[in-house]
Length: 575
Image 1 (cartoon, helix red, strand yellow):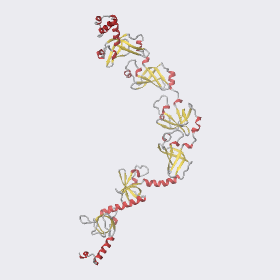
Image 2 (tube, helix red, strand yellow; image 1 turned 45 degrees about the vertical axis):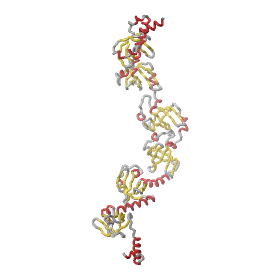
Image 3 (spheres, rainbow, N blue to C red; image 1 turned 135 degrees about the horizontal axis):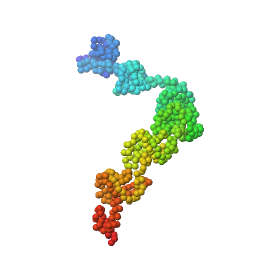
């Protein structure tokens, strides 16, 4: 202890100098990676010698083998370890070779990321959203998103599993220690170099033969050229006619010639045109006339019609509404096929909007005009019921391909037309009268009741305020349903027309089957309108009673509850 007491002692100074020189050579610090030399091997453990440590660190042999360091388990070999603790609670040194390897690997990843260099790795397994890639040099694990596996969708990646290949580091999280890689970027970079060489072959004005339609977009159509380059034909370069979407003109897999109109070597893009291979047909659109028949070629069939070609480059739409006169749900697919040549009439030419409208049905005989000539309004003919819905029948007359319309109200003169409709079925023969023909609207209305005697004729010799006898058929909250005796027409008496006094205007007073008298309140033969009223009859009889029986007493015997009051008013007027 004396040697440390006197610091000026020469021996003390010499010891201090030796100690400082030794510590300057060996810097032992927790959290650092150090190299240890193997000096002893047992069945389970490896003992290392690290200069500056008071005891030998111990490593598990299985850990070293799992890290791929089995060949280094020899006396004298050096192994890098992470010094976690110089002395734990048991007085032993705690080190880890696995953590040292990961830290060294992370440092290599950081260097590669900063220098934008690719790394070698292999896909070891799949996970949610992508795959796990192992860094071959260090064994570090990285994430490969599914979208970064390839530049095109792959259904099966088994051929890529455990194969050493290059990956680009696209994201590095130094705080969490996470790395994200991309195989797609490596592939694209190679293709970019190749694509630049391919694009050098093309210049504006070149004609590309037999390019294949690869896909559509809202702004154009993509073509594949010789399997080495994809080019775009913009929507405006497809046709001189108006095109809303490429699928109106092209089908996937078709081959077309293209003209190169632009080459961008920086963006590595080639723009092409289809329409510029032919002259603009709208420059001589005056050669075509309205309402004249032309042969057109079907080039594309859609759900809503067909696109037809008047001449190369001049495409127009034949809408499904212009296919047939009589068939309502007809489709172009059922009538035509691609490359068919059909007759059409030009119905519109708009040079400003570059639009030509055509019609096929106008080249055919209009069956509505034929029907009007053969069966003018008022004609009675026999037809067959070809269809039926909840309120009408559709009747076909003879062999004309038109379905005439028969509403249920035109089946019977009574008020229960829907009930009458249930008596008919598809295939029944029926005699009808043509009521209305609208050629422009393509509508023909017929009726059955008009072929029968009109029960309304019963009112032709009747007049307003005339008394008639009716039979009550039924009652409801609105009033009475009645039928005049000797007439087959069902009429109604409103609740307000049942009686003078509101208390007596209850439809429930009647049970049905009674015979009562009423008066005709309104009558219009042309409009087939008649209004019946019990109340009006009471008023008429009341007036007659007042005129015939002028005294108060005599009126009391009449069945009018208010007659005596009315007589008093009459006497006062005389005074």
